[in-house]
Amino acid sequence: MFSKVINTTSPSNPTKFNDVLGRWAEDALNGLSDSDIVKGRVKGSFKPNARATRSESLLMILRMLNVSLGLLLDIVVSYYMNKVGTDNT
Figure 1 (cartoon, rainbow, N blue to C red):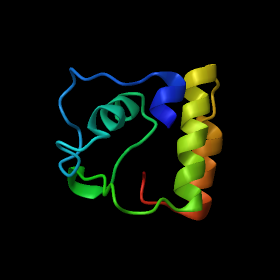
Figure 2: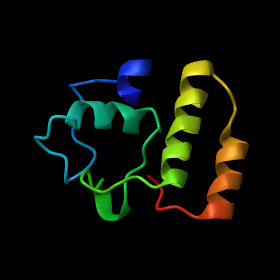
Figure 3: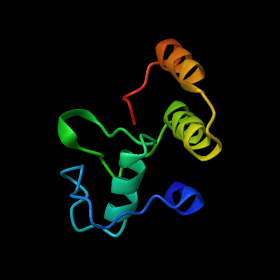
């Protein structure tokens, strides 16, 4: 959904996450990763079947707004990550 809103799909890039290779969302996730909207999990994985927590969802929305509107929301994102603690999705 995020990749459609800000058009981040880029099929020519290599896969960033080792567990999304060949999946239907591979190109979209690579584009979102290139835009720093999603960061993935530890050791190069994304865990595509895991449910995103509220804090992870909020961080992706804030990062999307940062990219699409050109805002500087890094301070808000950093503050929220320190307060809530996330797995860096």
